[in-house]
Structures are given as C-alpha cells and as structure tokens.
Length: 167
Image 1 (spheres, rainbow, N blue to C red):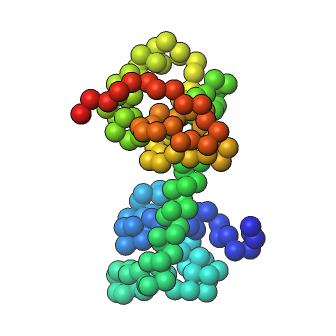
Image 2: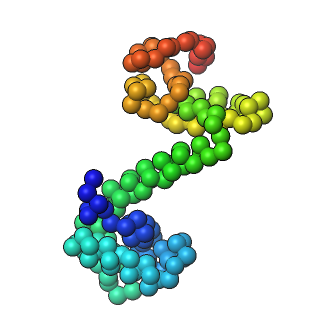
Image 3: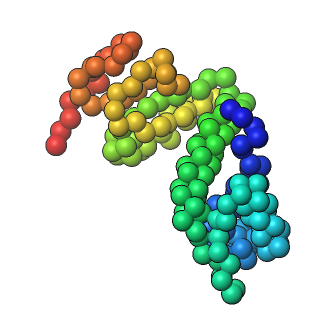
C-alpha cells in the first residue's frame, strides 16, 4: 500500500460526514468542529486528490459525480475500519474470546435471547458474533466456530449436528 495515495483519516471522515448531510455546518456539529474546519479539511482533500468533490452553490453543497463515486468507496472503507477497530477492542481485558459466525435469523431469534445466560455463566469470556450467509474457509476467516444451516461442506471444519429446524 502506497501511503502517498492515502489521505489523512480526518479529511476522509469530514468528507463522508459532509456528503451524508450535504452540509458543512451539520457535519461540523456532528464532528464537534467548526464549519470552517470541516470546509478546510474537505478543500485539503480535494486539493490532494486534484478533483472537485463538491460544487458550492450559494449556501449549499452538491456532490459532483466524482464525489458520489468517492463517497461510496470511502464509506465502505470507513465501515471496514470501524468493524476492525470494534473487533480488536473486544479483546481488551479478556483472553477468553470466542469468535462465532452465524446466520442472521438464527442469531437474532435463537442465539440473542440466550446471551444473557452465557454472560452470567462465563463473565470473563468475550464473544464476537458476525453474520455470514455462506460457508467459508476457517483458514481465511478469524472464527473459532460457526453455526449454519445445511450440509457440512466447510473446508477444514469438523461439523456437528445441533438440532433439526421446525418451520
């Protein structure tokens, strides 16, 4: 990764926030900055990229085509960084962390109601739950286990039947 192509995170966050609100003022309120500071960060980002991301029209800002494309990609990158940060922070103060992949419906309807009992029984254990819709390779994903529906077609996994499903 070439650092020369990666703008400072604060400018990317200011851009994403301003684009979401289509307002430097509202972005400034959310980020606890001044309107001028947000505007300056976005201008620095535009200068660094050599591309206009917003058109300034009277008292409004409007995303350019380049700004819309960049927003989509930057939003994804910021969401990935947020998820990675949350995951690594979950390890703080706990050496016992279970990383589990589940189907969304199973996670919300069966697993979630039982989490209070789990934390009561294992108060020092950490639990990271992620949604995965398809089988995956455990060597490429950071999971200790997965609860999934269907045939045991997981590369390198030991599968055990938990229970049948009633529809």
